[in-house]
Structures are given as C-alpha cells and as structure tokens.
Image (tube, rainbow, N blue to C red; front, side):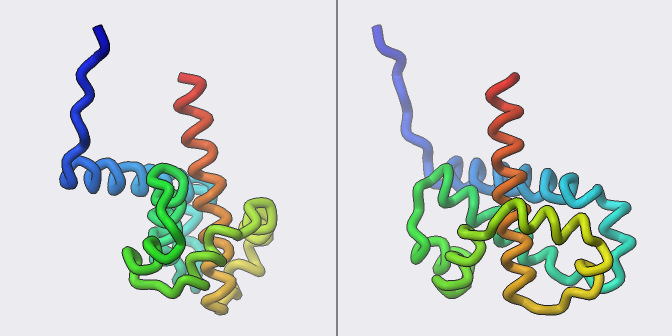
Length: 133
C-alpha cells in the first residue's frame, strides 16, 4: 500500500522556506568565519543582502521558482536576483579570505555578488551534510 501523502499547506510551506533560508544564512555566517569574525568587520553592511541571497537560493533550488517570482518575493529587481544566483562561489570565498578588501568594500552590486556566492556555497554544504547524515 502506498503511503498517503498530504500536500503542504501554505503555512507549512512558508515555515519550511523560512527554516531552510535561516539554515543557509547561519551556515553563511559560519563560512564567513563566525559571528565574532563578522563583529570585527568595521563597515560590513551587507548582511541584509546575505539574508535575501539565502532566500533566493532556497527558492530557486528547493521550490524551482523563477527569477521573476524571487524578485517579486524579495522586493528586488530581476537583474539583482540573477546576479545573486549567478555569483561565482569561488570568487566570493576569495573575497572573504581577503578580509582587508572585504572590510573596505562599499559597492552594493559587489555585496550582492559576494552574498549570492556565499549563500550558494552554504546551501551546497547543508545539502551535502544532510546527504551524509
């Protein structure tokens, strides 16, 4: 007998989205060196970009949502979402490792790029950990 599958309610689906986006955000902070390391950055102003990137990655990977949907959901432009989702993980990690450059960074587009790359990397780490568990 096949198991009975009940569809997720909108509330449950939103709760699941929020939980996974939060996991990606927290893993991203870990990738960045932890909360203490973040506190040492003088001009780090892109944590909101990291939160949006976490949602964007989860919506794209888990919910297969379009860039247009994600942009509307997050209140961003479609181009910003595309930049986040196309961000190069390795380049983002390099920029994070060069902390002096990151401390001095003030360009919003680059913040999104770094946030997108870090969020994508964090999402992949979470998926890998869950597969290994």
